[in-house]
Image (cartoon, one colour):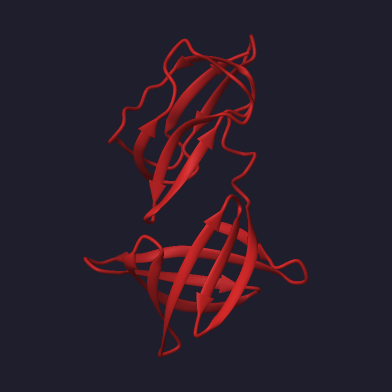
Length: 169
């Protein structure tokens, strides 16, 4: 997974890959502006986690406000926006007739489906919620149209690239 973090003044390019998932924590290799680190993350609650980095432990509180995050650790508050390089690439190119096949931008669990087959939707409207790494991500319609297929069900596990829904415009 690759993304950029920006606090308005600074921009960091971040690449992360999961090395190991253990019963109570996850181990990641993270590359931030070319510097490689191994990070252990343990979720304490949905908004609190413990991070072990370079032999130091950090208790972190994370609050999400749309695409912006507020992170509090060691009495300091940091605010930043995340730009995910997967944005805009989660759909196949339109096929004949304006058909869009929306695919999973990451592996995860479908926790909610917010519309039904045959329903008219608007661009930006939430279609389903995909939980990955204990964070819920709303997957939205990239264009207005009619939902003509939802091959997944609530509670289903999906892999990167699995079809989530189809929109005909």
